Image (cartoon, rainbow, N blue to C red; front, side, top):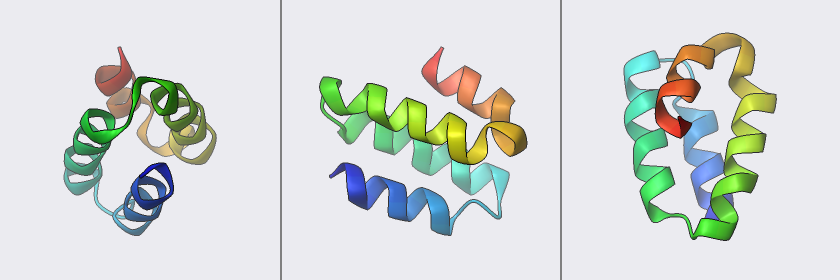
Length: 59
C-alpha cells in the first residue's frame, strides 16, 4: 500500500489541492508502521514545495 501511495502522490504533486487530498487519504490507508516511512519520504520529496501541507497533514 505504501508504494501505491507514493506513486499517487508523485503523480499529483503538480497541484497543491489534489496533493493535499491524496496525502490525507494515504495517511488514513497506511498502517501505523508505514505512516512514519510515508512521512519521512514526503518531507524528502516534497518538503520544499509543500511544507505547510505536510505539517498540517502529519501534525
